[in-house]
Length: 550
Image (cartoon, rainbow, N blue to C red; front, side, top):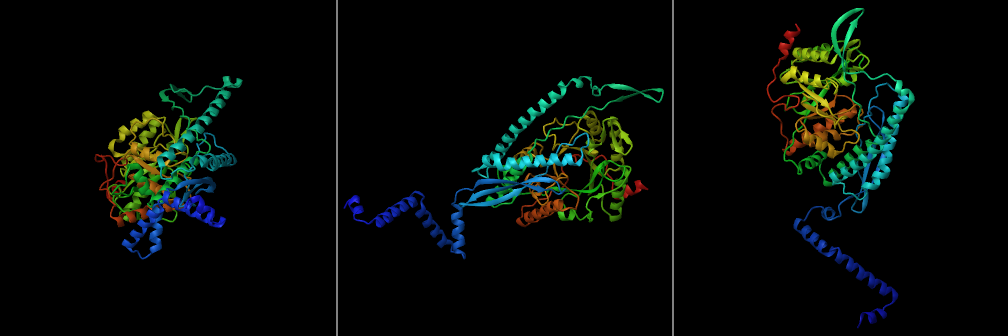
């Protein structure tokens, strides 16, 4: 009997049911469902697991289509300082259902202005940055990343960077037009000329002087921060966290695999640089120079042990001092009393933040209230300090970038006794400074995960990952990033505040996990950039320091 004759003898309901069966059979055949079910049942019988349905669920989950990004959600949040920031949440289609995979926020940085703005202006500027970032995430970036593979970090970061560069060029064109309009104003032709960099003779109160004083080079124009740039870093990190979750591994292992093209067989924990004291420009005392005095623990110590040395309820103490020797004397005396081997097993680094200290009207650094030093005089001051306190093995941002001659001079006079580090977070494209042995890197604004990997690979062994003063409240990703990038040092700040302790606790958790897995290794000695490969010219024990103080 032909199909047409057979079909004609069936009722409409029977024909519909027959056609549905044929369609189902074809659907199952095309998608190889019978073969997959047969294979699953064979595997089930061989393994005979206690949870039969759990085993089948896992089996078929592995056969499911790769997750795809379904949408991004940007929202306003508050950072650790109570300032507006932005957070990105990534949603993916997993096993035919939309799931929230992860969320992330990164530190923000707005270029400081030479003239102080009032609080309302600064708040308004930040609000505009955040609102633009939220709009970028919810509209253009949401469309551009829809259906992308969240595990393809390099492709997603390329999309993000391309989008950002287009916005940057648009902003740059606007900035250039505004500058041109200012230059074309009639009154601008009669404005005073900027200071020249040539030498000049100084006349002191009616009597002549042959002292020749060099004017400092003018400040380099700051790299502008594009409105909305926070969106790029937060989306990149949120996608990386989603990729790690999809692959069922920790973020640090995921980043390590991205950096090394495969998962490493061993990991080490970066040495935590702990801020002990702060007596910089915002402190109560007259001293401006020492923005942070930082403890460098003994190499090979566990994170928990290293952080037990100087624990206090307020974390980094804000002290009131007038001279740079005073906070260093305080720490030296504390180490003597606690019988801690300062200068042999534990050392110090100083974040000078010199860029913030330049008084351009006088052409000098205001190292303390009313105390001014020229760049050359500041070099002499550092040389004296390092000679007196050999436990200080690193200076961070001791000078402005513009004082290149003094960077070279400082490196020459200090030799191997002290390393010079420079923060490149806001000047990543600037030419290298002479004498600099290491760099501070921060995850801010438009910096993607791929950017961090690239910079850490280019500056192998000489990058210290640091926090900013505007950290996300509860995101511990910085600890995972530092471990995943294989960095030797990580600067997380003082031992106080939820935003910092979350990261310290995560570092401890990673260390314990690696130890349990048997893949944790410890370095035998401090690597560069904080410690040179050759021995220091100066070293002193706590007892020698005590004798020197007496």
